[in-house]
Length: 271
Image (tube, rainbow, N blue to C red):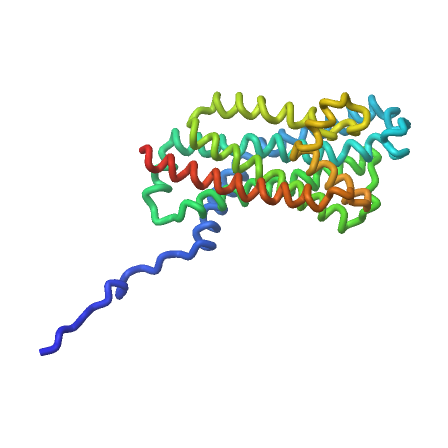
């Protein structure tokens, strides 16, 4: 009598693929974002103030030779665009801290979801919000008097660079949140990073108008890379150093995603 071998896969439910799992996580975070839409909406108040108030107060700065004869609003809008996604990304980890406190994170980690899908799903939701915010910032800038000679292609390039910058800070915020598990620690570290990153860059002032030590720091600041690339795209004239700036942002985005993935695995081992 021959033995009958049954495959253990017979009758077992198929495990969803990575893209399906990521989509499920994305859907969950999107629902949360829609229910709490006041957060992303309120985050747009700051760029409105910067562009319409700060931009008008310092409008005459555009006449300085350092600005190349362009208006200050045209110079300011790309910086505010990157600043908006920077600040928004720095707060991305707060959702994970809420999930840890409510027990949702433990449910995630006991499910068959891949850890990379958990990170990627939440990141995609953050990036969608960032793109919508970026479009609003560009629209506010247009109403404030900014013009974009780079056209649609230039705007798409600026949005792409903003997405890379958002990826870096969203993933870094996630890693810090999963490591510290503290809202206070995340907020403190975020403020410690985003303010120097903003003011030690060319977000609001050309490098040639800064002290020499600030110029040296600014040259290696990822915020400067993003601002200069976005500014070049909107103006239709990319900077000569654009290739290595874009490469640097892409590398940092990959490293920050790896950091977030390592952080969630470390968190799982610790519980």
